[in-house]
Length: 139
View 1 (spheres, one colour):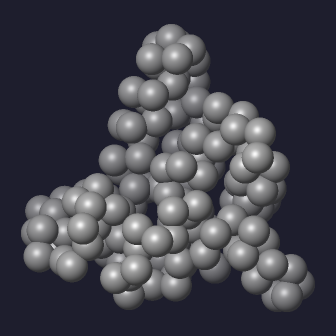
View 2: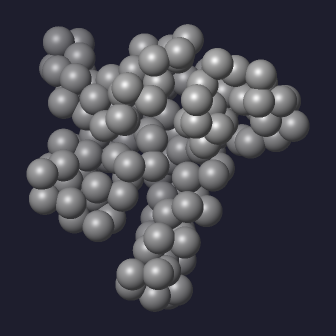
């Protein structure tokens, strides 16, 4: 199963967002165990580094990014992805880029806490708890 993780799900773990961290950490463990092929959009990496560096400093940010790069495949952001994002029907350009990057990479799902932002998605959109339920039914 190929799943692109939205930035908010990764930040839930890295910033230990209490209400959301457990489900997100569980899903990341499934990536680590190769039970899910996890993807991150290239822009997610830069966003995460920026946010973590602001709150924890540059060294911890670089460490977190290195860990993510060892676990996840990176969905590229190239000219085609950006052109399709511009012409998509998404209201938010950043969400459009993430969506088009997922499509370009062959992801089957996007996992996000902001499913409303992906109403125009061509891929199934799952909240973390929904993806966990799906994984449990497949076991």
